[in-house]
Image 1 (spheres, rainbow, N blue to C red):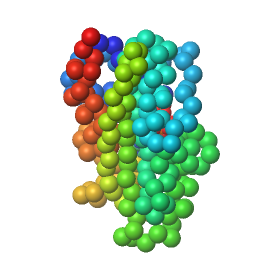
Image 2 (cartoon, helix red, strand yellow; image 1 turned 90 degrees about the vertical axis):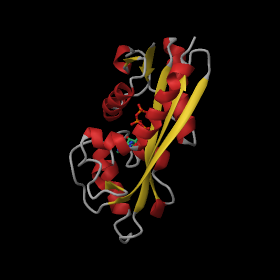
Image 3 (cartoon, helix red, strand yellow; image 1 turned 120 degrees about the horizontal axis):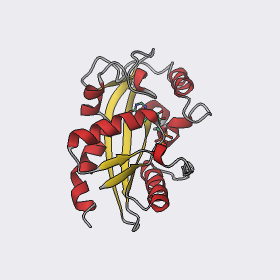
Length: 200
Ligand code: ITT
């Protein structure tokens, strides 16, 4: 089965290709570079699930192929769950990881150790050209550092230390991050359902 990965975030693409390959899901993954004519979907939803479904349905209907999307972000307890769905454009420009991370660190600079809990959340959505859909979620808890550390991953990884770890997710290897991450959890669950969902 050909399946389109409905994201243009290079960090996600790298992780998703590896996660899905490791599950042995019976799919051939096409990236959005195969469909340069398809515009980015406006993320007008109010939840990760709404936005993931918007992106997956838009690409499934344009390509006529099953499409899977990832909507994800970081939710900080001391900021009442923000940036959440606004994580990719928290500092203004979409996808400016450095500016987003610097702003978030500044916003929690007065938050004491012990109150710096945050969660990474990922919603994976599969949409079929028929309009059928399937949604799964993954969450990982952790704490925010005071300085960025590490060069792996993307986005807020240099300031997020998962529960049970001393390293940030940017200091983990790709395998280590995927084994515990919100994205690994969501997409391994989706992959387990794929044979049934793609049966025609
Ligand atoms: P697509 O919509 O094309 O998939 P996007 O970057 O706009 O790409 P989102 O709207 O889902 O995707 O925003 C996700 C943001 O959340 C991302 O830009 C990061 O800032 C952050 N994020 C998500 N997963 C992360 C991870 O594993 N590590 C670090 N930051 C992450």
